[in-house]
Length: 312
Image (cartoon, rainbow, N blue to C red; front, top):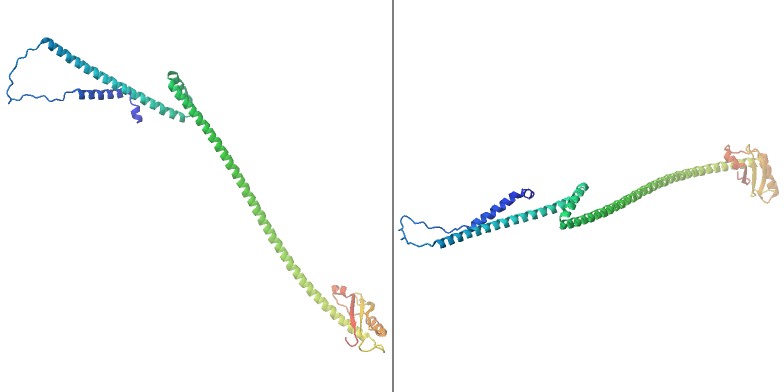
């Protein structure tokens, strides 16, 4: 289509004129077949006709007028064909202008300015073209405004997307921070739990050892109390008035060497002579046997035991 539009206008005119001339010749040609006499036919009798010269001239003149009329008709048809071709060319030019105008709107700013200048020149020659240019300018302005509105909307959308992306990034960072804090908290809790468990185990072990120590100390105390009771029993002299059923509880205070520094009856037997004899036996048995463990000895500085004759 573009190649056809770019052909020279004289070529188009020539084609259209030849087509119209061919049409006129076809319709004006006498297609009635002529009958030629054959050699076998007999010649018709010759009839003499008197031809009037005036009539002949009139007929010739009429034929000439008919021929001139046909020529005028052919000229008119050719003229109409040329006008139609010219109108078609003008219509094509108008279509080309509209296509060029649409193309102009898509060109760069420099081409736009040049096209606007051309439109201004055309507007000076044709009012209708100027009106079309004005409408085109308004359409371009609307397009620019629409483009500006879309650009602003796109910028706003991008800003909103950026804001959301930053918010999402902050949320992820916050979630990561919380996750790390939670992990750290769990690790710290696990560490504390392990420490507490270790401390509990250590405390249990210490308590077990302390219990064992206390048991050992108590066994040692009980053992040395028996030693003391035996030694006091060996040093005791029974009073004449005391019976075998008498007993008392005596409290003895010692120093680390086993020397007795004090002996008191804390539960009397009811017989003063028996009580005094027990106190005298405690001092007589000094120094008493004491445990070699210093910690046990600290608890052994003051001890109580029941003295019952014959129980040791």
